[in-house]
Length: 157
Image 1: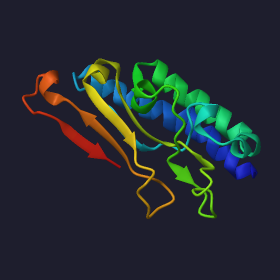
Image 2: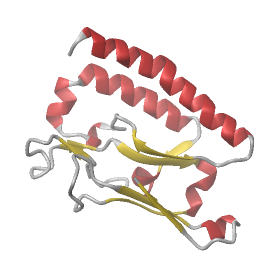
Image 3: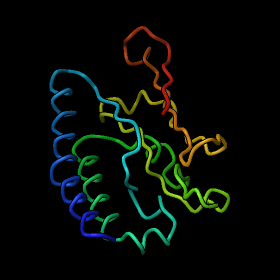
Image 4: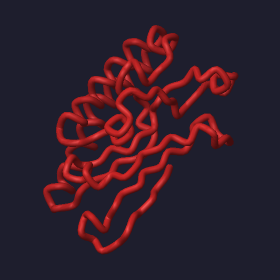
């Protein structure tokens, strides 16, 4: 691990993560529930990564995980883990055969405001879809129940 990697880690945790959290909190303060989706470059828990990665990148993974869990504790929900608490699925793998052996990480997420979690119908990881070192993820929200008049919305990344 290089010194520049650790310098970027410091920026990510102390500036970027904090700015992102402030931004989504400001949206909620305006009455806008938030869905944050994408590759967040971290795994929420050791269950979300295979053991070799845990050992090799321990300083990076622990710092990022702590920061991500602070974000979640501030009022957001990891929708996949909420619906599937014991399921181990990965969303990213090494391009050198890691996918075949499922030696991967779960770094792609849909996180939503706590106020929305009752309207989450499903949060899926589509490991069967090939074409990238990441698998697509999708989130289904019941907007009719939420009061928008729209039945359901499905989004993916």
